[in-house]
Image (cartoon, rainbow over all chains, first blue to last red; front, side, top):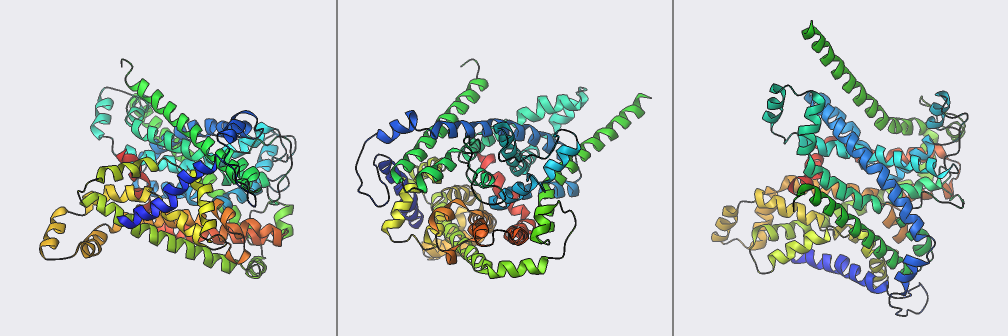
Length: 290
Length: 279
């Protein structure tokens, strides 16, 4: 017991609190440190030209990714639930693979798949007549770049949602389904009236946890932005720049540790707000008469 | 008539859902296939056309990544992942065991701290951790990577909630009567009885550490200390045009994870879903 709390205290609790102190200073590598109070925070929330755009970028990704994977996750889990055992294990294993693959591999494979010259995505879109010719996704309009990242996030996390929902579905009492069938409910009604409400706890857990994770997204957008060649592309608008990417680019790379700590705390505040609002909305829905 | 129609309908529904599942699975697996294929092609082939069948450049690509010192990075990643997972599992097991078995003053306070800090992302402590590592003169070594993985409270939570069920109090009591020390009870009963959750935690930590990119980017700056993600990331600096070899490096980076996962998917499923069911 004690060793954990020592390690935990020294290497997590202390740095967390110390980061807060650092965020109140103008700490920069190789320079004298001064205490400057809330100045960093004021700058972050008012004049910083990278922070709010990066928050917006991150939110857009979350807003498009989360509902898609939840709906698709429930649907696929529902299909899988009706499969035979062997098929179920195969589909589950195969679809969960993207989730444990290293983000760096995913970043590079997707850069390749979306590449202008050799990417399969361009090839298919041109063949289907959606695009007239292959495009460079990294210099394309913002919405296309965002689509690319959202698709990548969905691809990576869908298996996880499927797995979570599938294991939650096995816990639903079977007699509920039997009763509904006797009453003549069709498949869609069963799905919407029984399965989805019974999965409520899992959905809550998934929404809150994924929100925390997605808001801190770094690896995937960072790698995608750099494309197949691995060198950063300079465009004026950076629709893939999430908060953590901007934290790394503008604070860590330049050694501005004090301001960097402020960015992480700023993000933490935003995460806490989002989680509290979500919790509040969920509890409101649960007891409408409270 | 209606009977045969519903039968047909049922078959059609089953076919449709299966078709959708197959399409999704193909989409899930295609990138892996593509990676595998690309790793057998020369650079010119990778960047000039879409390849769907294996090429002949596998041996050349192997030579290139060996020359790039990829084996060294492979060893580094393995070493960091093994050591950090081992420390994490052991330390979390002690804390989880204590919180599950002993009734002491401040127990609920400790449990609350564990629960609350699970919500605090590691990134919030990152800058403080970096400065701390600087003052301990540990930057430029592998230790920041190893330590940063060990202090997560998720493992403690997982073990705390499972050890309550896996370790019966009577066994602990009777071992005490036989005069066994508390620590040896923990080693002789606590750990063997909780093999399944400990394995799960070990595997999850191993993969998290193996895949960790951001910490490596921040803490590691010498080539001989690069972990696999860093080696692949910087591969472009060294051999800017060797895409085929780079794909091979990615295949090798993904391979251990696939093997671990395929042979232990049961442990994964239980570990991944454990958090949600309790909450």
